[in-house]
Length: 84
Image (cartoon, rainbow, N blue to C red; front, side, top):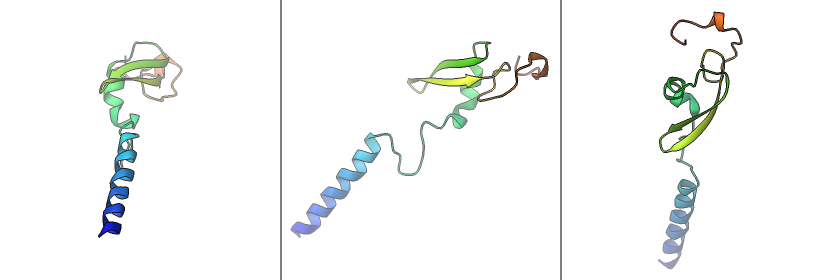
């Protein structure tokens, strides 16, 4: 009985520590690809590092000249009308 309580306590401690450290037991809440539409909607019109508030935190991300998350377009003429 005493051994079972100790194992249960240790299991709970490890599980709560992983969750508090940002772990989601199988997911990644900071995955920028899932927030792509939110970030691109707040693009400041310039290529380079962007700062956008999302879910209560400020996210730093990189945009190309079209405002695409992690994009690689360097010529504005190659952007689609939607991005401009």
